Image (cartoon, rainbow, N blue to C red; front, side, top):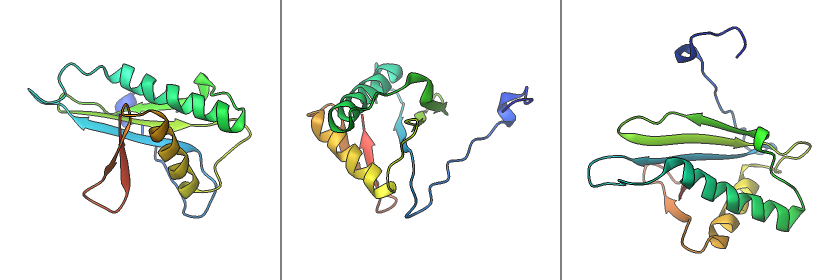
Length: 130
């Protein structure tokens, strides 16, 4: 946001309307605690995910991922890694959120065991674990 010097007052809301075209997005998070997820490199995990996304976009659609069109919103704390990614491909969007989900399932399948699909216990939505 231009003109907002105090970044603590900045907010960016993701609005995803059902049945409408949308960009690819990820809500990545995991708890951080002694003995739990110690030694994980947050940036390397995001890079791994984006590497598989890049390959699938190239293989399926002959599209390149533009680094300057990946928006990373970091809400990580001492207790939780939390990063939201919005991936825009200039001139393109997915037909709807279900198509994004299918694409991400394919990305996870491509990764072997590096990206895992996890059921979100708080809802009927699926989550992806890097």
